[in-house]
Image (cartoon, rainbow, N blue to C red):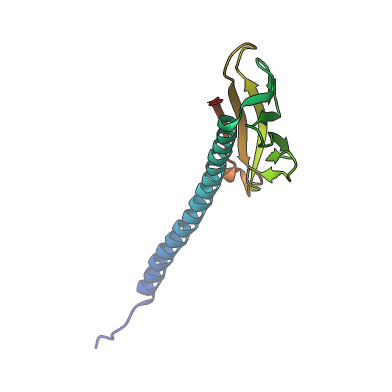
Length: 165
């Protein structure tokens, strides 16, 4: 008479197949998490680059003149004059964070805390007798504390902005 059920060999094969499927599933889920983290780092750096660039561009376009750096030179600090009676603006880098200072007010953080801004350089491209100043801003942004080398992300940004006036 035939007994119904599984043999030991069939049971071992079944366990092996189930464990392979479950192992593959766990590896796939972990890799999705790593990809998500890498994308988060890239988006954070790219978003900060866009924000920093747009704020610098907005302030330069609204300025009447570039005080520092003078025409034909470069500096790590940008100082702008605004139409009267508005106070002037100043961009400076402190400990990897870009700050915007308005005369007589507290400084405002421009770049986010998760990223570090380095190699900041403002170049006034105007010649001494030009009617309009043109400014080149360049900087490097990187994720401040990557958990591993896989999450290290860095971009270099260069842009040129003209005063409207």
